[in-house]
Amino acid sequence: MSTSVGLVGGLGPESTVDYYRRIIEIWRADEPRSAPAILIDSLDVDRAIELVRTDRPGLIDYLASSVERLARAGCGFAAFAANTPHIVFDDVVARSPIPLLSIVQACADEARVRGYRRVGVLGTGFTMEGSFYPDTFQRSGIAVVVPDRSERAWLHERYLGELLRGIFDDACRRGVVAMADRMRVDDHIDALVLAGTELPMLLKDRRVAGLPVLDTTEIHVRAIVRRLGESGP
View 1 (cartoon, rainbow, N blue to C red):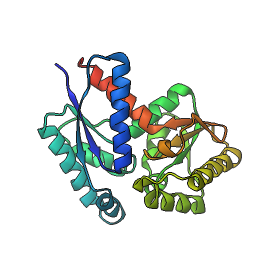
View 2: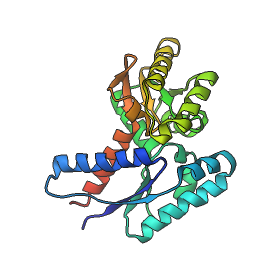
View 3: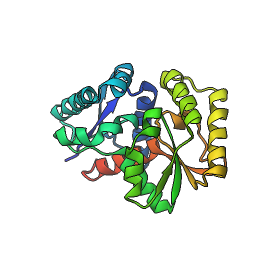
View 4: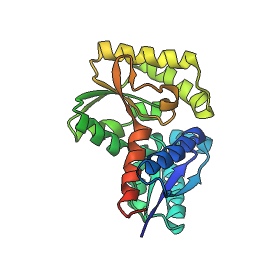
């Protein structure tokens, strides 16, 4: 019997659409005559960002309620279609009636397989300044480097003001590429983690500033499709 995945979406809408499209594409590459079962519970990105800023227990409640709705709808497992909510991932797991598939753990596993030892992480300020990426990657023996304070502030502002609104322009793209190049030279990173699910829509190449890219959306989607495939089409 097949299972279904529940996506906690809307964080933001553009990346949720990208998740849906990619899951369908990757599934159909192996199972062209079938389609995966996907349910999406779309949340309010502005409310979620405010909760990240001011009320972490409220954020846990907001995300856990979404997962509970997906579980009641019959989903066998769930995933956040975003990186920033993983700031309270363990707390939501503790309340979840179904397994949750972590984008951070999936990315750490991929980085270990590829043999990376020191990676640069780009995302929202909450992600870059949080402990969930360093803690998870450290268990795989991989060091995490983030941009400096002024770079983080610049990227966070662009992220919330542009990327989450579906605005992907050349000025922002050039700024992020320059940031990655500076980290490659000064911080000696050997790969770049796009730890924001909007970033792969801004930076579409497999290499950025001469660095191989870890596209967290793609990595997470492949892990989701593998889990879905375990029970058959």
